[in-house]
Image (cartoon, rainbow, N blue to C red; front, side, top):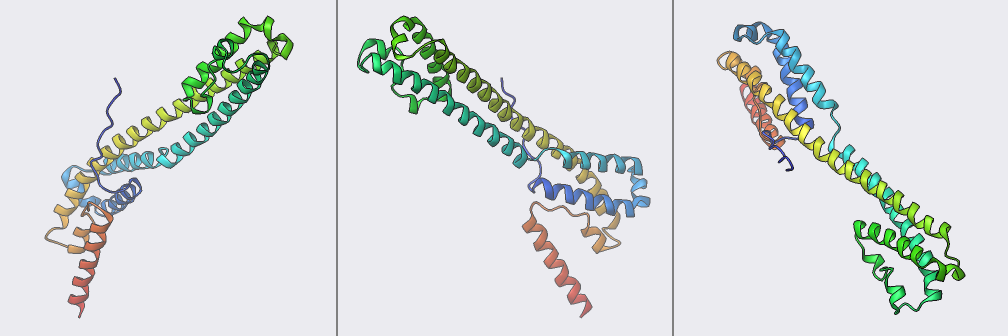
Length: 237
């Protein structure tokens, strides 16, 4: 059974989460004297930073989607080669049998343009098999082992391209899962660090207190920053 993807516990982008973590880590380094009083020492802070750096190094979704698109293009090219090989053989078959005869119908290529990938692969192998069965009748129109092998080689190339594409699809699913799990892990640690920082500065320094405040989105953060600047400007007036 396919594992259900985890749910993100943060509502900002992965890039914003990383930046927020790094800003909080810098603030905590400055305030490490106070943090140690909560049992949050320099070693734990360094370990948190290492986790953030590892999170940043994970392949992003754009990277994985790009790999997937490249493999899809190659798969489509292989599908085109297979269709060309099949049609080349069927042109010869049509010279021998009318396209409404049973012998022609056995090849099953009538809707080749509308076939799914698995159907196309199945069709290619059927064409090669049926052609071999009738090779003595089709020799006069140029169908021989070389023509049949061209179809089989195209089938093998197409199947390999299909498998690689599926692997990239799975890689993306795994990548999303890894980033979600890792993001949730560092977000949990960020919340601990932020709660300590706010507790330290709640009654001492509003500006430093705000440095540890977490926001649900960039819009919330920008709104809070505007409000803080208005307050600071009013106090200075």
